[in-house]
Length: 439
Image (cartoon, rainbow, N blue to C red; front, side, top):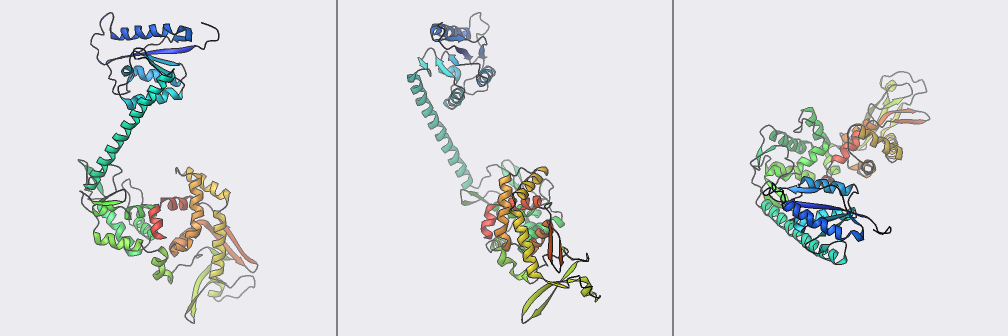
């Protein structure tokens, strides 16, 4: 072999579908190997040399790739030990065009060529590569036809209302490939709808469910995201969906149509409109968080004048009629101080170090959320703030504000980030369609 000729390591692969005749001194596997080795020897001038390992599959079908010698050959290819695969016929390697295409993808990824010694087929030549491309085109056509058949069958089955697999929703079991109501879980689902119709709030519904110890199938307390997912699942009214189309299902409904319509009537209304009847009873945003310089809390109070409501935070010294020492703020208008705190919280949520810290805290709690998702959730809270119920706003304040201390010189707002991980988890759990319906 000339010194300038590149050495090509050749692996001979042989296969026989049955074990019949293998006991003979010279069997078909030997015949295949002799022909392949003779071909490799004829290409010795091109730098072809045999690898010492044998890759023989005895009694294995060519209809799949689950063959021990073939798996071992593919592993050696991935490790860079083989340059050329030599077979007696193409069907010895695979009888499936789709499997053959997968094998070729693996070979091309590692720079390995393929030769069939009895069919004048070799990917080392331009004609061989042309033939291969034709075969792969048919393989692609076969995959697409099979995919269309599967999709058509799936759509037809969906149109008949059949259960086509996937995660079994809370409230149902699967028996004989059909959804059957679960007598223990179905009342939980109905309770979600009932509480949402009663409260008009996903957050308040989740709070009431947790107080009643209503849980998921795994025993986890239901959160706001779970509530919205359940409210949007048409399975509960005996229907199935496929690509935007709704069909009558074969399974039994566990939520009445009347209850569903009432819940979705509320979902079609923005949270701000839903919350309007409760605005006059809105909780004081900084209740329990705002203090004077004397360390005593300021209590929320209000009065009406000219038909308008005026809210304040008043010092305990004033409420109890104690003497004024001159260093304690007697009364603070609620709206300006609340707006100042909200502005501080919004600024906090935009800080890169807060985003990174929240992401690390969520990861420490076992969440798989990405840093980008954390950033999107925190930034997305800003425009949604006015859409939140007063109770939701107050909950966020309690989670993020440690203390507000007011004095004659102004206010000292002390924030904390311990509650951010839980807040992000709630925000990312809300399905996109729920946010769109709330917009």
